[in-house]
Every structure is written in C-alpha cells, then in structure tokens.
Image 1: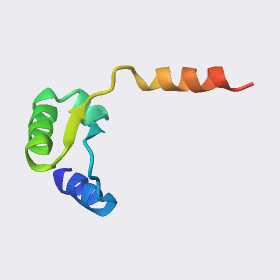
Image 2: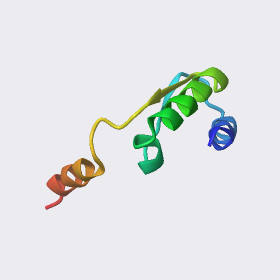
Image 3: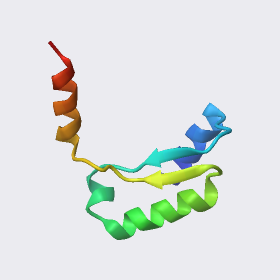
Length: 69
C-alpha cells in the first residue's frame, strides 16, 4: 500500500501539503495495521497527512441522495 501511495504521489507531482484518507475494512477494523501504515506514510511520503473517515459510507450516500431531485 505504501508503494502504491508513493507512486501516485510521484506521478501527480504533489507540491503542497495534502491529506491521504485511509478507509476500507482491513484498515478500519485492524487498528495495528492502520497505525503502522499511517506511520509509514507520514514518515516516507513528503507532505502527506493521514486521516480516517469521520462518517460511515452510507452517510455519503444519504448526502448525495439529498442533492438529487
């Protein structure tokens, strides 16, 4: 996962600080794995700050549905 993130960041040539959102069952339900990956990202990927979702995926679906008419 770290290599994939490093590759995307390099290809997109990020220059400003940015957030990387970690989500998915393995990261949300495996706190040790999430912590190790988060530490690795912040140590190795310049400008990156790791965040985690504040809401469950269904919240996004509800917000999107509210914009539809």
